[in-house]
Length: 87
Image (cartoon, rainbow, N blue to C red; front, side, top):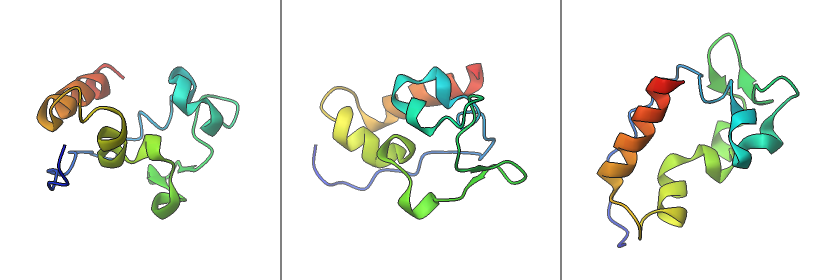
């Protein structure tokens, strides 16, 4: 993959993925003990370490590192939106 610009992931900041980090093997280290990310600001569904968040939380960077050679960005977005809806 080239360093082309990706369209932004259409995150709505619903907080669903941050409230279920225990269900993702790559997110277990973020679990505060009840499945919720230790960095989630629950009142706003925002991240308290947004600028320094781990790669699993940076969907564009995560895609480039793990999936760019496997699936297109558009397909990756579709898959992730589908997962979001199931949460």
